[in-house]
Length: 395
Image (cartoon, rainbow, N blue to C red; front, side, top):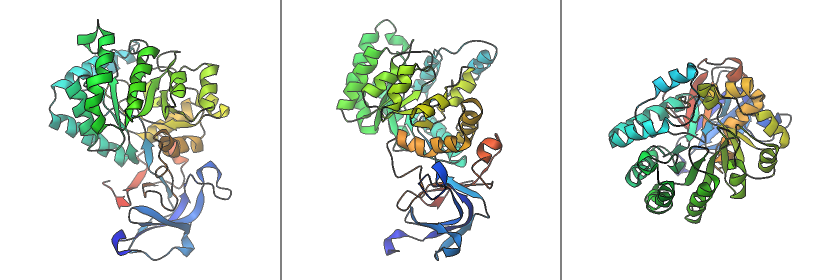
């Protein structure tokens, strides 16, 4: 260990270690039994049988519990003010979800101070971390003006490197009769203001939001400016979003609820990840995506929370894993992989969502002997301890 690497930490007496790396008969999760893991300098330095564990400056006894990579939540909307609980109650009483409530949050967000927005992101980020999420993507999209989109991304960047410019969430009220003018604003002054703070660009390509032509124009300009492409696609009904995402080489097409055979084939033949957001279907009483169909076709699937105040106000990746197993026909192993390695793929990262030598030491110790318990015991707080960059976090 070099003098600059800091104290080492051994996670010992691990009953089941999920690595997401090929290992013997460990299956897709690369399971290791009776293992130990050494952390140095915020990275994984060694993995092996517990009986061969090296000495370290500190030690955490996992007491036979399961250890897995920290969850990677590749789709969230945390920069907002207010909530939309009455809208949720109306949906539970039978009112369909249309996405129209986004403008309610836009008004509240524009009126909020930086400190109010920052405090809300901090609260939700800590909430997610306590449930095992060590990497989170955060979108703008509730400002929809040049100044408010830039400040949303600036605040998001205080909490994550995975920031996404979503100026094309919906057309704001002041541009309701001039959507072409708003697209011009997004592609010009708004994009320029967002660039210093964003890694990605996204569009809500859906009826009532942006059509394929507008989405293509916005994403193409963002891509040319150096941003990676993501896309809200096929949530409310069939549409062109998934195939547009594949056409543009997007890292991820998100929602993927209503897919044609051609959509599935396009995803399976591409590097675009199908990111599924079961919290949205739960909160809107909508049909769930058919993950089994995507997996059987060979598509890469990720799971994310879509945490937002309107259609999926949850920060819990364990909850989304349980929904994916129960409602989307995923096996527990597939759902855990999708919530870790799948999320990393959706962010085009290879240093997270996996536990191997050199990877970031982001990991979760369960209060359970196996990853199966995440779906087997839904709603139970099973996260015993979280390490981010090798440092134990608040519990």
